[in-house]
Image (cartoon, rainbow, N blue to C red; front, side, top):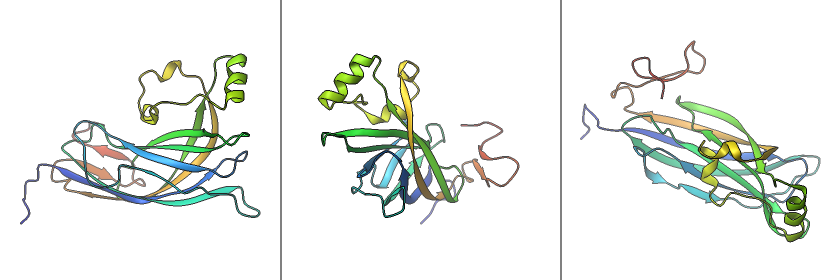
Length: 201
């Protein structure tokens, strides 16, 4: 039996981490995790995962994973809308697993199918000596917790370098948002995003 006055709305996300473009590297795999606000809670699905290792095909520069995503969230308000954080790893010259890129993007607000491309970046050493030492020791700079990528705190003092892109495909379904007073509009309409009495999340 369903209630006419729901207390929460649902955000259902499925899709895949399709592919990556890292021209200089091959034999890469990725990890993902979701970051969300205090009012959000996952009700089903996986919050994090790790893909298989993939290599470039003949005549192609793309690394194809087609790694599935499937999770459902519930919340009482859109503040802290979920983000997905993707980290890409691969071997260096000495066979050590090192980070090849970090990136994050908000889950799309509007229901339907979406394809998004995340620009990736890697932390940089602050000096040439540190850069050489980290290369020699096989310990490149990396974040101890990849979720820091989805937060702004402390990021202004981090030196990074752009490196590669990851493409994701999302299928989004929402439930009971309109009943709670939130309106999601089509990306093709004049006003985009999520609104409630003219306020943005």
